[in-house]
Image 1 (cartoon, rainbow, N blue to C red):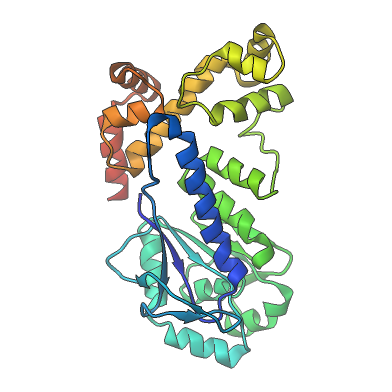
Image 2: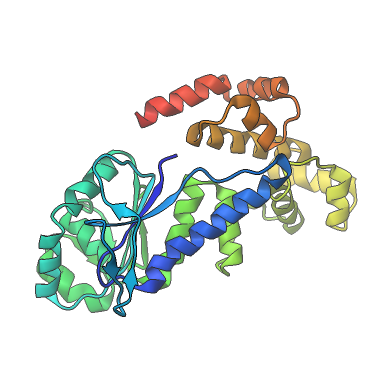
Length: 323
């Protein structure tokens, strides 16, 4: 998968920069922990911190932040994050946009290439200037409303909207909602279980019916299995971990999710395999091993049965969509 890019601008707030950098570290640790039983594995997606010219930037408190390089029209990214930054009035913002003449077409290029674009606080105004927010509601905090209306009178600047999710465009009205935005991105670009892990570890727990069963026993079983699906799992072991009997667990699991715990394990393994096929160059046999299949022939057969395609066809189709 293409790398993540954090585009640091002068005056960026530490908390908004850290929303992505810290979340990325947690997500990486989570992925490596889940696949630990299958041997050492590093997350192939990288996070690169970029500036407009490749030089360091000055944070909101004047401290220097070194970066990994400059924005480049050659690179394509899976996710681009524009953290919130200090706004010192309309003239200063107009000057910033003038000096950012390379950033606006670059953002349009990344969006056209399929990147998810995220922005916080005043960075939403950069998305407006880039022409990425036509016909969508843009969360703008009350303090920035006069600036937004003066510079972009035809755009929908919504004061009461905390977080706008327009698919490949996500905007938070300020740093208080940055983590929730980043979690949504992680759910889409990495996996739902990584997103759920982040909500838990960050204290952002929320019940999402499409992710967890309403039955609390089954929901606990889902989480337990998501943490161990790459290894050898016995249903009796799962029942003992949840202090219930195996028949009760299987019965309630089937009622809540329409499948057995064993089928759910295979679902998790195949779900992880499809992400690896799409986002890595690992061999199919290695992917089968990593997600918990001891027999790659069984993996290939189950993958085709589940998707209607071979693993190779799935990878080729994914590459064609990106290309």
